[in-house]
Length: 600
Image (cartoon, rainbow, N blue to C red; front, side):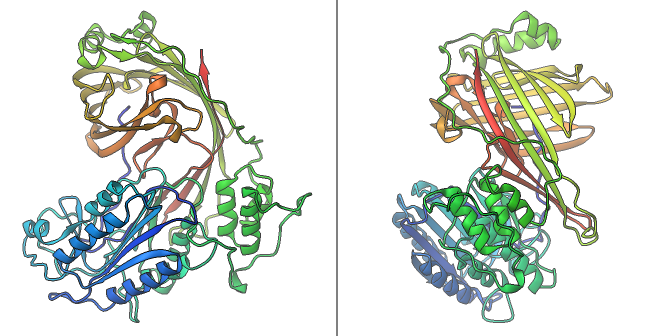
């Protein structure tokens, strides 16, 4: 629960861009699919040429994908809200619920809005009354309990409402991307999407084409769409994605078919036994061989990084023999992790923990007297091991000639030791490209108390203010704290931290990791920290408290900066961070050999 900076997206031009895709979870290929498609073009202030055509194109595309599609053209606010109510009703317990909007969009005070026809917007306050909040669409899908929610908002066309708002920032406010989701933008920050010179807008036209290709993982759909849009617009429009999706998600089944110009020489090994059509890995490899493209081989490696055909797939991606050949063993299916006997009571901070992390009497007294620590569950010691492999690709206009560096391999071994009641002493041994390092830190109820780096005492909590309580864990419970952390390696600076956390609900812990038992409580936090004169803030950073083990996922997993969610770094997750500019880069991290066990 340590304060962690959120990497904020570069802002867009005011009122211009609202085009994203949110994929909430994974659904089976054969499923009940419901879609609402809206195209608004006949605006009084600045009519658009293509949104109705785009909506009709999406209607045809989605019907081919077995969606039950409702099409609405040139809707005013009353018509849009009525269509959304009907959509929510039809989407109840659906396998896939999809909403598509083409037209004008804008942002006010960090919220994104879709502009209906007949909207009378002259000032910021008008937007709330005249437009439709994009977040309300997401809430309707969530309330409908659809297994998959897919929202496509193509509203990046040049808006006539620029200047109506004093609080509008450059473009859209960032939306949280939970694990199992994708956010795809029609263009990069500060740009306007092309409405198209032909019948359709460039982005929707290319998206529809890619959706129609059999066998494509949804990440490939957006990747290929972005490549084509950038090519067709001469680099003026560069779609981008934030990816939090685990596993494969395919809307149209079948083997991929590519144009001859994109084919690679066959490098497929012949397995000893003929692939069985019922084996998922063999099916994925067969699809990759049929497509014979880097994207197809990359999709196979995402799902089976240590699979039987992994070496051949890397060759197919043009990597040749992997630069790093550290042995990787796929994690076996584990048995259920049986927690130790649970108990709870007032927090106990043992003397050795106090001495090791140099906790003052004031800090210890503040924790012991806090309402939050009067009835805290005991923690269970846990060991977590995994290997991460980081690949960097230079993508900036001036850096395409820079050679691709070798992948970096890092092994981590976290030993989370229960200390007293409600506290942990966490130590990590890490080896990065063969260089060994050690880190340790102390936490009570998720509250960071201090840490060591390389055996040297590095950080210590010095001021602390606590209010509220989330223990015993319950929906709606709230806990806030303010702290000052001193960085002892350089006494000239420290950090001021503030956080407010709210328990929003619970799920089965097995949804986070198959071997866990009991409940996992979802905790949403907002706050920030100030360090060396710079302030960093975040909203809706998501953690989970795993009840049977008395542990926060922030101590056991890794942090996905795009979605602001802590996750278990299993082999189905791939983290992508993009740095823009002339010398931009794309860093991809994949995880292998993940193991978790109880420390008695």
